[in-house]
Length: 460
Ligand code: NDP
Image (cartoon, rainbow, N blue to C red):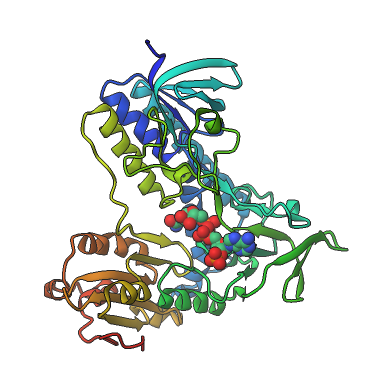
């Protein structure tokens, strides 16, 4: 049977677009459907607009730091609509580039919702058409989790709404302690918003090394974010003055202008018709795939956040690329999910690759820990108390650096380079053979001579 397409991709985000382009490059007849905007979470309501807001929020500190270097910055004022609209204009520009690249690759673009109707059949909802494809790739991403059982939850915004606020609130409470919560708490507080971060546990950024978690939480508090731990919302209501009144499980209540959920994301599989084709899903709705992104149905594949493996843009891109090479270029390829670096763009940013100290001790036994904290050179003249933290986790038996954990202004860029060394399995001795670049913060990475703890000792 001749299908309409060799590949039909559902979702034009990072993973779907890459897969579509690579498959088309290898001669496949490819179509892609997107019911929102081309570019997906990363470009439209994630990494890109977020990072631009982070840049915008950093100026206030830079203006304060400038005085120590002799500058007088007078009448500095911030205008939210200018930043918001400029960010959106950039998002629109990138969306256009994504569309152009798809079209240039010969991919048919359907800007409407697509639903799976069978193992090789897709229904396009708006145009009410049915098309067939030899292979279907689910790359539908995820969306912010909203606790529907919470009274007044509809009064809260999510990160997707935060990019479009008519005006900047004077105060906000953000629930969550992960990437999005920390990044938006940093953005809002940097822009002068009175910010509360509400986390259900003791220490934010679960999954990161304990030293990163402590350092970031202390820095958020030091820079004026009100970090409330061991509590969740019990109720959100409209207060007497029209603001939001939030009640917390610890008995506290507060009146704020905005409330935001950043308590995780959910795979976009609801209503996608996957059950009708017999595709197996996890309890949270994630599509179950093997290392080649194959589902249990031979013609259906999935990549990116919809599979809830490692929910990061570069991972989705690699998964999409590997899928296309395997299926359309005759080159079986799978992405190695080990040692993927990531960064939290807070103020200051944090970044990590490899094993945390706790995981390394549990898995490898004897490890040595190298750690330094210092005030970067620039902060001394600036009178800025922000400190940088760098930590290496080294396996004693092999001397391999198995974990790097950083907090500081350059952390996200440094971790990209450190990731090469960790992925390559380089030893601490090899790190130390590398000559320092002076004066930089990065040089500390090759200058940590003595361990602070080793041989299964508890961390210092
Ligand atoms: P995360 O999984 O990072 O964090 C979710 C947070 O919400 C955790 O602190 C979690 O607490 C808390 N939480 C979960 N459920 C509840 C609940 N019912 N009530 C109260 N708190 C709750 O999710 P995010 O939404 O921040 O981000 C989603 C994913 O997107 C990230 O994991 C990451 O993969 C990706 N991302 C990456 C970014 C980057 O690379 N810079 C930026 C933004 C997102 P607990 O720890 O106790 O479970």
